[in-house]
Length: 90
Image 1 (cartoon, one colour):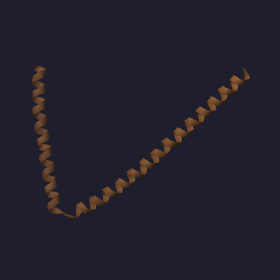
Image 2 (image 1 turned 45 degrees about the vertical axis):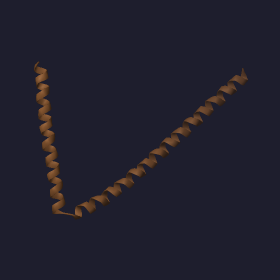
Image 3 (image 1 turned 180 degrees about the vertical axis):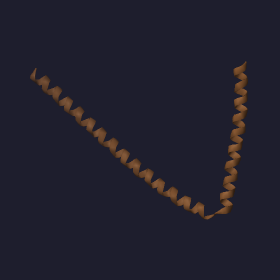
């Protein structure tokens, strides 16, 4: 029974912790809005830059996978050609 009791305690502690965390976040948001309206504009510009960086990395990743696929296709065709050559010799 002790373990179940500990679970209940943990659950209540976690709920209280999450509640405090949420309240702290909300109060921080209210303070940031009231103190500086220009910060939001700067943050929006920064997020746009990161979005373009992410798309650039995605493009390079797709290029890498495409080159890997072509390399495996070449090796497969080479193997097939060697098999045919060995069959013809036999």
